[in-house]
Amino acid sequence: MKQLQLALRQIKYENTAFWRNPPAAFFTFIFPLIFLVLFNAIFGDDEIPIESGVVPGSNFYIPSIIALSVISASYTNLAMTLTDSRDSGILKKIRGTPLTPWAFMVGKILFTTFISLLLVAIVLTFGVLFYNVTLPNDSLLVFITALLIGTITFSCLGIAITTVIRNADAAPAIVNASILPLFFISDIFIPQTLAPQWIKTLADIFPVKPFVVTLQSSFNPFDTRVVFETLDLATMGIWFAIGLIVALRFFSWEPRR
Amino acid sequence: MVDSAIVVKDLKKSYGDFLAVNEISFEVLSGEIFALLGANGAGKTTTLEILEGHRNRTSGDVTVLGYDPGKKEQNMSMRVGIVLQETGIEPYLKVEEVLKQFSGFYNNPRNITEVIEATGLKDQIKTPVRKLSGGQRRRVDVALGLIGDPDLIFLDEPTTGFDPSARRDAWSMISNLKSLGKTVILTTHYMDEAEYLSDRIALMVHGKIERMGTTRELINSESNTTIEFSLSDTNKLLPEAITRIAEINGNLVSIITNSPTGILGELTHWAIENSLELDDLSVRRSSLEDLFLKVVGSEDSAT
Image 1: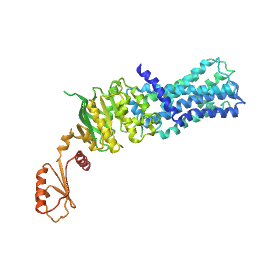
Image 2: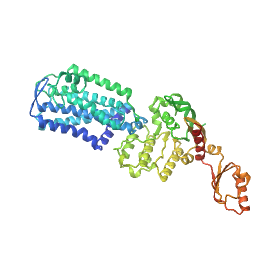
Image 3: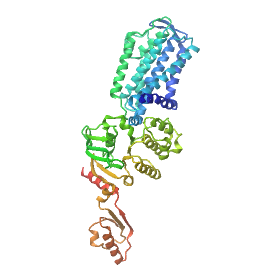
Image 4: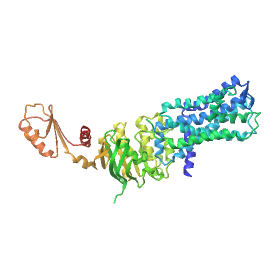
């Protein structure tokens, strides 16, 4: 019980430290917003073909950028900050205190969830105010569940990826190299309806596309489904499990040299 | 009867073929300050980190306050304060915030203001950690080690990077811990520090404990007085009794002895008879440093 309280208490300190680190806050917040404005300015008025039909550009890009925001707040941000904390000895120090490892991690993931939801709220507000997007009322439950599943899955993967990052200097390279290509093939920047089959198949293996597609379908006026596609859910579930197992098995609290 | 805060028996730690710690045994009594000394790579930090629970041992028995540190029990962390060799503190939090954060981890933390006073951080409480100097950051490390009001405190090179006055402050703070009944185990590269602070010392060389005992015992175990002077006129022959034991380097003569009174008597008598002045005459007690250099030096040349 006390550890759960401590996990919640950690959020406060995570939050304070986060906002005092301008580059981290900048990348997490400004980056998705720049993409939001750019893509909507360029393609917002176009009709964009996706698998379930043709949608207005903004209906494509708002959920895309929401996915991008969640992923950069959870996966990218956690991987970078954890590697940094690990290499500067912060994690080792924490490990020597009575704060349990899981309370520390739960605190991190809860803070990540908070940042993700804050970003989603900002992007949605932009969408409603400036880009004529309506909230996915009938599929709201799918939308919210997808957000939570996405945050937790990508948080786990963010923790897991630190196990292959040798040191903090290598973090940006490895994190970006692992996620940017997926953004391009997973319906985030460009719709993939015209992409060759092998690209589509490749994207289906990774967790980004199922996440994006689920968010998009909840914004698609022609798509009336109110449940997850089993396959999307399964793909994300498998990646969550992989992330969790790797993190539990190999996560290091000691600086690596 | 004084009980033991730490009991180590046949502790061994190897990394592949390399034996970092080679079957060492020692006890740290409750309420004492115990120092682990040794050259870089002698195995001090490895030993300390096994006791802290940061490393697993290869073999041997270890108990810390009755717990096995390898099991990483929370009850042990509640009663132990750890100051690692390298500092790791969230750079964007202020000193006060970090102390508050850490004090929340413990059931019965010490008063934050008290810890801030004890570590001399009064003027830095509102400063973000990243803006502190190396020495100040080190104090925050120590403060974080004390915040849980531990019974046992690990200090891995606590004063490295301190200026002389900061070091004196740290010493009085550590002595204070002892007067509060805390047990302290520390490593240091400063022999004066070990000599000033510790009740007992273990001197490690290549993973083994070469010497162990009270600080006084160790210092006295060697010939305990050094007499030095320079002889301007090297043509004058020193008395036979002195040349036999002296080491002469140019015109610097040094004598290490257990019976300084007799030697000095002979020496001054000879000087007066020959109307000579013994320039730069000094008589000093041998220090821990002399012992350290002797033990560590001889081991190094043996390998």
